[in-house]
Length: 136
Figure 1 (cartoon, rainbow, N blue to C red):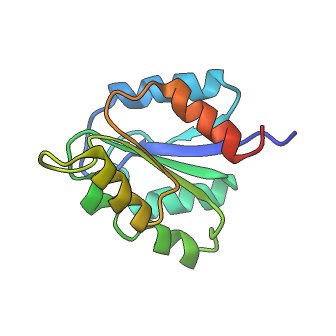
Figure 2 (cartoon, rainbow, N blue to C red):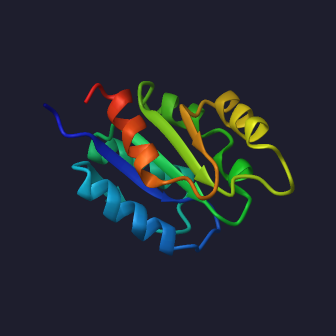
């Protein structure tokens, strides 16, 4: 069975590195090939890394709340770059203000994300979803 390749990073001007390092560790331990771009990653960097790594998914995290602004248009950039089938996952503090997770999830799905996770989600949940999404 093909190993699933994940490109991950913290989007925009966000410098929160601890969660990124934890996710890198747990995704690697789960058997995925991980290309970790670190913090302050632009959409262009995500797309270029996904092309270079022939990635199956892009995992975007954000803790500083501006993820919604930073993620707008990522699906379109992926499609334009020939990554029409790439899965997009987002997690963390993805919006500013008190917004229900249901609304946050709806906004991100509308932007073309396949899965959306609230702050504090156990990484095992994402691992299970990735395995489901890729028939593992």
